[in-house]
Length: 208
Image (tube, rainbow, N blue to C red; front, side, top):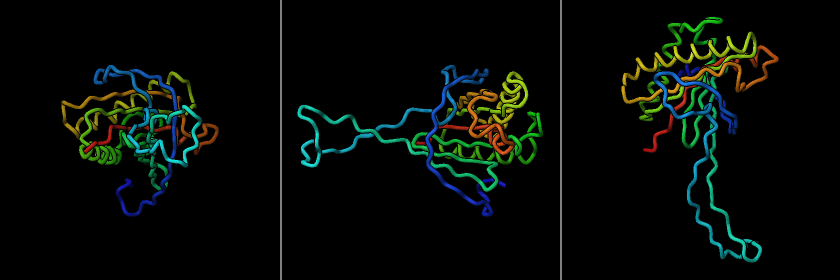
């Protein structure tokens, strides 16, 4: 079941995520290092403020700082948490749990999972995105080295399907495997580990 079916229950929340970066690039990748989606700088826009407003209590000689618009993130998740979409002012990100894409400890996609990835490709076309990031993550079970390899293989598998669906030589892919880094839930429970085993696809939002 994808996010587009009528039986899906929706939940929206506003969140802020800040992380550090580690990873490697593939032959298809842009050479510029990147970070997991959600860590980009916030957008800026002018805001009209009257410095002579009598309600502004500024010390003598003080001035107002440059105005900024905070990057607000809206999260929509299906009922089982299998698929999540995050929208910010600048980016769109989809996160798919590994269980809906792969068998245990495998990087081979199921037939059903390809339909989910195809729906993400449709959104990429809608946004006219030309730079796509595909990041894989695991839980903290097993060795860290194994998690790094498996998460990269899974990210590669998802990227291959996106490439087939989009069929656009002008698109640049950044594919990375982060293993157990950057968990989004508590690894001490199976519920948390299930959320951490995921592949994320993110791309810029259209300005049009």
